[in-house]
Length: 182
Image 1 (cartoon, rainbow, N blue to C red):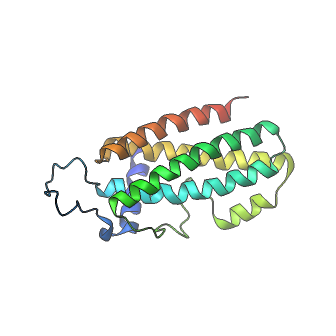
Image 2 (spheres, rainbow, N blue to C red):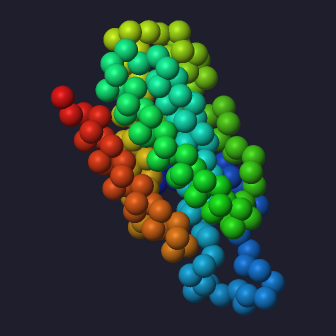
């Protein structure tokens, strides 16, 4: 599992390129020990989670309309509210870090994210088959979010980014338990 996490973060950092390194404001002295500077792991995670959350919000909106089970619709609505707030935090962190707004992961088939054809298939599915497919994809998203968030708590540097990662790891674990409850 650790190898998978390292590989994902390495791929994300590589995809983001070296031009995303955050620079402190001109009035702040640059030191290796600066606790307010984003390291490449922080940046890669932020740039990964923005499109992951944006995509999940699209999928949750579909579930809110198409889920056959009212409990699935309610769960999608609950998750959407939390993910909208979370996305706002990521966008603010990305801006503070001075990271590009372009999606460095667009078109990539990544763990925890559905491809566009998978989303199109989900849109065309209904009834119990929809609920099952939605829950499968949501589980993958939650599982992957936990893995990557935990790696940030260990390898990240910027304090508010690490705090958000710890919060996400805990909330996703709770959401996963709720999803898997009978």
